[in-house]
Image (cartoon, rainbow, N blue to C red; front, top):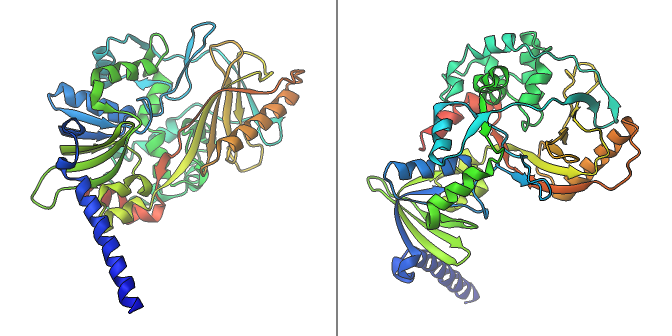
Amino acid sequence: MKTLALLSVCSALISAFVSGIEDAFDAQNYASNDVITRDVAVIGGGVSGTYGAINLQKLGKSVVMVERESVLGGHTNTYIDPTTGISVDYGVQAFWNVSVTRDYFAHFNIPITNATGAPLTTIYADFQTGQQVTVQSSNNYTAYQKQLQKYPYLEYSWNLPSPVPEDLLLPFADFVAKYDLQDIAYSVYFGGEGVSDILEQSTVNIMKFVDQSYLDAILDGAAVVPLNHNNGDLYTKALVELGPDALLSSTVVAARRPLENSSGVSLVVQTPSGQKLIKASKLLSSIPPLLDNMRPFDLDATEHDLFSQWNHSGYYTMIVNNTGLPSASRFENANATPGSFNIPKLPAPYQITQTSIPGLFYVWYGSPYNLPQATVKADVTAVVEKLRSMMNSTVRTPLEFVEFRSHTPFKLVVPAEAIAQGFYNRLESRE
């Protein structure tokens, strides 16, 4: 009798749960202004999501955007110094100088200029030991570009041939050795900032991040920035244009996708003012497709398998004060160990670099895994202490963290075995 009673209770709970889910998708359970009907629902208000939403509107489509943060722009982080009024971007640094970029900035009447680096003195140091290091690295990418040119499709897509070329699946350390790229390895590492353990990564991942567009930007100046050096302006103006169609500080908690031969998607969204129901003809997702992010979207078994295979890096950006380091300097982390190509182990800062605001330095920090903010700050503080000693600084003022942002998860990748087995073709087939 107890077993029957338990089964009855479980059955009742399941029925209540299913009923609750069904109720969440019933428009009659919402106030009229909490039911949003649009052509496209855009999930994620970062760089790509915002661009997609704005351009869909330009094409005459109605949109609604769901963004979990309180601002748009994703990895775009801008700091404005309250004393000087100078703005610096410590997230996204620049944009490719292509027609899409120019048209986008022109749409918001934001003047742009060529991105140029400040004249800084570069000092290489082992951030673990606090010792200065001599880096043997070239900026002549000719040999690397020769390899890139074998795979022109990497510039625009993950549509890989079958079988996947063997060289693309090699660990990057083996690829470097095979094609005598030792003199450019450190520069590639620095260009792929945010990619963890670069020497162990599959070569295809490196070529996707340090691609021809990136090389054009650093070699030919093919990158632009706003004239006022405030990338955040783009997203402030985008938010004004989207108006109430941008749901900030909001997340999708449940989704109902169309059955075969039908269309439309329904989303239950938790917003600061309560739940809303979105009914859209199409869904555009621009969030990292990690399993935890995608669970609310009614995944099937294949999607669950695909999204569970991702790995990612931890990436953190900061502005710090009271470093005690010389102005007009860039400190780059380097490894003196033979055979390392001067590429350091992570987690660690990539660089600590003077900004255009006197006394303030950028810090960009990478890790193969997520780290708590306190751990990152403690490590950065310890590194700055070592650099102070190396530079014979007499400053003992505690390091101040003016800004800190986590860009984790960063640089999503899958293992070479998954790539060889057609991961990206399977992923694209789900679109």
